[in-house]
Image (cartoon, rainbow, N blue to C red; front, side, top):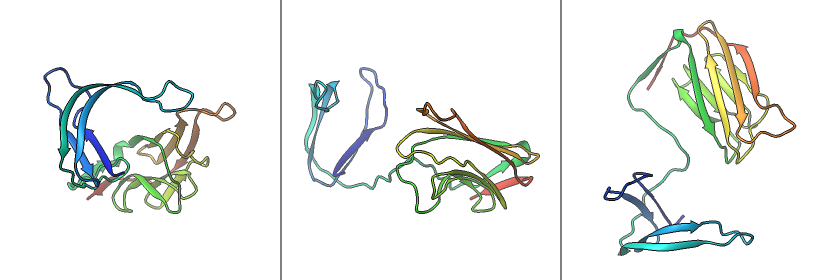
Length: 189
């Protein structure tokens, strides 16, 4: 996109300060606050409708700032997870592209720890060093799914996935259970 922006807060009250972060490849740009009445531009709807509230700036200088797609977090500090108490991780995911390689969703330990990955075939896998369990039903592209992966200290593992909009002819949840090696602590960097 040539012009993209977001605010530092989603909700503000009258008198609050709101910061705008903008990336522009098009040079100068204008900023206007509008009250959105209807945002659907489909031909079957009433069309886009907005009411101007105020103009914040005209001809503001634009500069480009890289905005990586997707949501992620990276920690530079070492993180230790005591696996002797077990571990459960959950994530909402909406894959927009599957394959050609594995895609990490949650990981710790660079191959020595655990990872939840989206395989090249669209199936979800929980990896613990040397072993894994996989959900055999691929996730649907451009649809939200809730994923839970759980590991118990004695090596029991379970993973389940629930689509946000279930298909009426399929089970509500896809579940996989297995046994994984007993792990102690995992260290990430």
